[in-house]
Length: 194
Image (tube, rainbow, N blue to C red):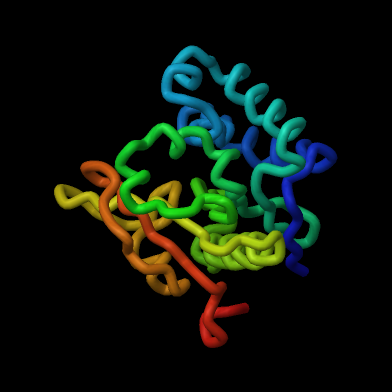
């Protein structure tokens, strides 16, 4: 049985279980990369990154959502209002595509337990995240996949262009050498919902 839950402080142990199994994911990031400025992140070790994520839960009530299968956390999507994901606030290239950030929410990371991949859980956790953001009043949802011209442009920790196109996002423009801003307005289309 599947269920989706927001990562609130009382569910931290479930997030910790998923991430400890994978050594904090991506070199011990603890999904804190987008929660900090580049300078702040660079000064933190693994434990500091983990603590930063815990501290954000004190400020924001939740920092994303977990997908469970039979009460086991198997997939994660980091999302929230634009102010949560500090790293994007410092990217001047995004500014040229923004008009009103008041109700813009963003997706930064997607992770699926290595033992549960190839079953569509990445898509499911993102669909549930989108549904949650719309319920919180998001007027638009943004995502930032990479587009690598010199190597495989497949699914990265933040999805892929094709992944988001399949969910109804539009490609807005490049915000860096390899990063693309994509935006969804109005929610998932009927044929693309769960």
